[in-house]
Image 1 (cartoon, one colour):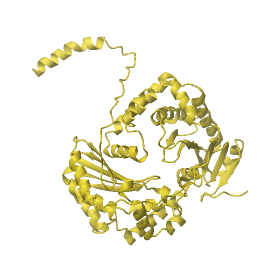
Image 2 (spheres, one colour; image 1 turned 180 degrees about the horizontal axis):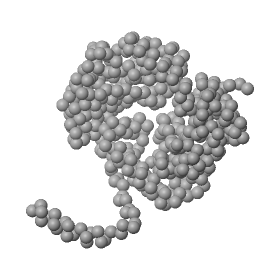
Image 3 (cartoon, one colour; image 1 turned 90 degrees about the vertical axis):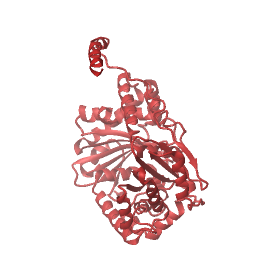
Image 4 (cartoon, one colour; image 1 turned 180 degrees about the vertical axis):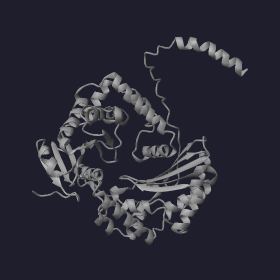
Length: 469
């Protein structure tokens, strides 16, 4: 039977090939409308939101807790949220750090925690057959961390070493200076320093956890080989002692819009290259055009096919690479175009970055070029849906940033339908060349004279302090 089918296929193959014009690139099919999986949503009496995505392709489960409290709530001690997150898996009220690590390892599981500007997350993943024990360890770390003094001292020392090393890293310094220039007094602009880390005590971690970790400001996303009703019941039982409470209200100063072109030069000597960031404020995470803007940004600076890469590397040979990106936070976002160049071409590279930013705002993108970027973005997005942790975080993004319920279901379709006219309109709306900050990290004595031809230069040291003339 199989041999008959094989011969029949061979006989039909020439006829099928005859209908294909191989001189023309095949057109992609329409992006799936509902590529993002459906989630079962439930709210416990405590206010804890639970999102469950059933996926039986592998006998595994991933759980992710998200708390609406990140580094923007550090207050006068930048680095506090990061240290708190780092110690969530370093021992609990019932298990010391060694015993806790062994318990996780014995399940072949992985438990991690981290803090971002707007939230702190804790995640665990393992085999579905270990769900009950995974949940116990997960809840123990979330609700009853011990913050042992010896582990705190170790993490504090490691953080200090990282900060000292960062003072020699041009990329790190450029990012820190960008945040300071863009966000000013808003917490997004705060810098974690050795001094701020040394001011943090174990009691500060206990207080941060006690103030901000509440079920009514939290959600849990579950992705894996589970049944929604069963896992929701287990989560309800495991987190039954977590009671809702009123969290503090923190007033934050809004970032001030940039006016004109300013140049911010951080002197890092000796250095044979410059790190460049051309940046400005952008809308917060909850703005309506994000999927379409991804395509516009990809056209400008999305990897090898982006215009910045083609211009600065392929045409001029100024750099190994150049790119652009939008950053999304709950209260304010940013745009940045970046490059690393030789000292002697720092100013010309900046001019080319500005030229490409201006071109995408004034000239419609060709259909062929735009089609390539649409396909690239849709393909990357669909591929990312294979990652359970990524899917879990996106489900929680809808809750965290108050996005439309169908935001990710329509994501691929919206990227696939961006027209040249829409791309031009979006570029004009979200990319500026008039009110921008140009951040440069490099050897001031060599690059400053050329930068001064572009505008007034403000000089900084590696502590991000302005150097007076």
